[in-house]
Image 1: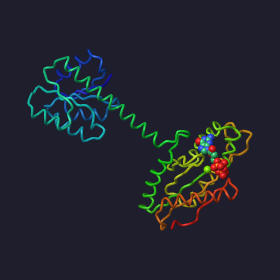
Image 2: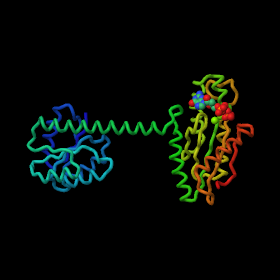
Image 3: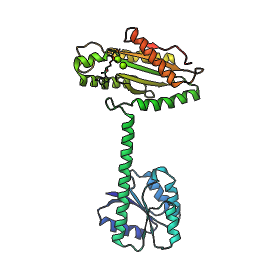
Length: 310
Ligand code: GH3
Ligand code: MG
Ligand code: MG
């Protein structure tokens, strides 16, 4: 069941349309406007989105052409089905309306069966459009989300990091990253099994989210590695945040690991700052090197890269 917006200056026509369509099964909500401007306002205000628009061509105030032009200039209404309602059978008028983005015509006086059939078609088109959009959004979400932890994946990190790096270089602000890797994680899998390992990874993602700021970003970088982006954060701030994160893991008791002792994390920190070479891949390399140093240094450690990217 759909919502139809009727834009027509004649109350009589509006009532007639509603009466005919109410006897069918396709539309259950009707919104009315007596000119284009009011129609646009309804399209933009209304909480319940309009599925199909039936619009008169000749109205005082904003006419049907102008309404169509304005509607189609807005990306969100670019594909909303619009049926023009007219008593004219002037071909050039119809062509003009089609050129402005009308999808169909219905002629006055109405033939009830044709009217219902045409509007039903329009509603089906809208339902299909909505389904396609939802599928597209779902696929986009899937392509950028890690299925296990439900946080952004490596691909999403790359997009985000590139954008943040460009911003940092452009505005001369610092940008830090962490590469964090669970210590001796293989032992968790070996001791408690892979499913428990998975749940530890999910819990780890939540710990990181709870520690970082809302403007920061975390992605699953690899198996048991997480990457954090900290925009507008210099080396000192990043070191503090990393230390907070390390401490949070040390203190945390994971589900199913109550008698295991602490599961710790090692973190490599790297910062881009003004005057340094703008080399995003180099910065990731530095974080990786720092992480390696933290592991070599005994794990449960934060290591800060002090190298400049050359
Ligand atoms: P280190 O302290 O040096 O990092 O030791 P580690 O054991 O954490 O590191 P290692 O690289 O030797 O092992 C990582 C393990 O993570 C091995 C791999 O099976 C496991 N792993 C990777 N992805 C997943 C996953 O999605 N789920 C589970 N349960 N385990 C995973
Ligand atoms: Mg590890
Ligand atoms: Mg690892």
